Amino acid sequence: MTSIGLPRVGAARRQVALWSWRKIWLKTHLWLGLALGLFLSVIGLTGSALVFFQEIDQALNPQLRIVAAPPEGRAGWRPLEAIADTARRAIPADSYLGWCYWPQKDDQAFLFYYRVDNPQSGKPDTRQVFVDPYTLKVTGTRVWHSSTNLFDDAFVAFLFKLHYALLVSGIGDVTVGIIAILAFVSTVTGVVLWWPRNGKWRNAFTVKWPARSERLNYDIHRLAGLFLAPIALAVLLSGVHFNLPQQFKAVVELFSALTEPERYQSAASDSAHFTLDEAVATATRSFPDGRIYAVTMPKPRDGAYIVNQLFPIGWGLDGRRTIYIDQFRGDILQANDPLSGDGDGFIQWQWPLHSGYVYGWPGRIAVFLFGLSWPLLFVTGVIRWLQKRRAQSVAKERRVNAQSPSGSF
Image (cartoon, rainbow, N blue to C red):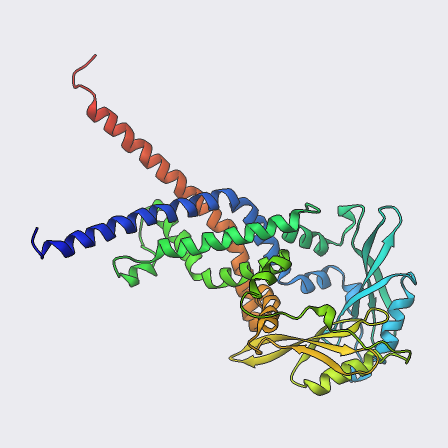
């Protein structure tokens, strides 16, 4: 064999190896898509709706969420501690206050989440209390999550259960987390299969038109998956964080240490705790660039106020900052910032990425479209699979006929 022939042999072997790997990627992408497509369609459609869950819930329940704002707007709010006290009096005394969504507009009510024991189930229900910040009037209460009857949930709460647990209590959230991991793999294999081996990048980004229905279906499938792939990878990764938090954090800790929230505890004291007004003032004074999105009230004895802010980080992006404040001294115990470059900062990225809030309205719309893409990819993928099966069946029939003796009876 001449020396000229050696590179050709090497190139041929590489081509065979690449083709073998491509078949593996193709099989992986195919069977993951067929096995998970229906589940991902449900998760995707509900996720698209939940991008706007606050707006949907407000449209369905304006009597709970909309209040009459005075001309001075938020300057007319009553003290925050009085607003929280109003909510406490509207719920059984032994209930546990979880967190509070902050009004993002002047005409919105405060929304408090409480865990209330349900003697029928022996488990807590989640109840919501809505408070007008200008009049200290409770505009209403309702069951958010029922521990006895799924259909007693609020509509948006039902969508949440369908999205993150497929309505299966106990193992549903773990199952959806595993589905997210497999969908991540499927997305990566889709990008590998799309990658133009011939270097014709222009063709890789275009739809062939006019074209037969088979080709058009194929182009829709590959380009819908391609253009939404960056969003898919971010949303699926953050989805793993929410559904498999301990496993996700264990992986993150391989690269950077994480601080458990339990370490952010208030120093035990017999003195009166700082009021909600004082805690919020501390967070706002220390981080004036942020706007409050939610606040978690401190647990008795050693719990801390937890203030969640959204703040601009440049390039039109928003990050989420979590601030822990001692309930007795008013000191800032910790501020987890997405720009810190450590594991705690990486965890802070997950909610803005998953919800689309990282890029404001454009980001939310992008996540909304990504959710809608799952049923589109599933349907076009199934059609593509059936088309190839039909083509293979026709080719096999032709080979059989070609091998049959001519003129036989």
